Length: 112
Length: 113
Image 1 (tube, rainbow over the protein chains, first blue to last red):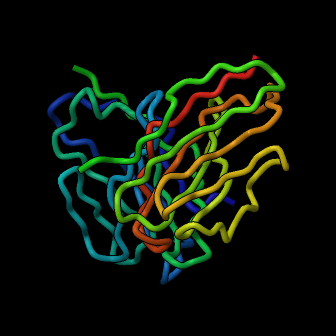
Image 2: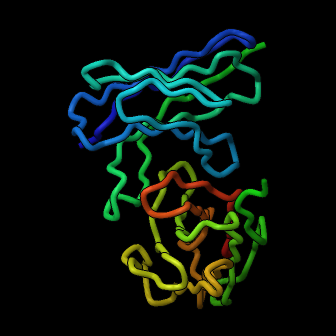
């Protein structure tokens, strides 16, 4: 069973914020939310992760709801280079949970 | 800083030949992982290194696949007697340790003809 659900695709206008939702209603207390993306013909790229507090880095912001059942990845000013498949996963940061596995993700297309 | 690098970026080989794929992890990262991704498919875990040892080789598809890591840094994935079903993008990732986020290299696209 998939631990996360994401929309299949979304479009975004260049220069606008892109808000990518992810549902993880069965998340456990010790599971973190991670976001990766994969631009066509490139390796996956780590974006951000968080447990329960909102997080921000140079790439994006991660907003996690108080009940932790869903989250939103925000790309504040999308560019054409942000066109990619975005993956939301949950994982326990333990010695037994290092095998990354991505679902179908959200295909984000940034349009000029 | 420098990210994970992999070489070659592309490799075309004939069925039955051996190939070696190289991964240079981020300096200071003790954990190193190999995955492969077939066209349009998800990630398939192959092997995990902590330092020079491989506590988890469970994802290696057959005994034709082997990997080593020397000096706690560079890793080589070797595929012997390649088959057409080995064609895929082979990805290497590294992290500070198993608890940390993984950073991927650009991958090696292997085509077996």
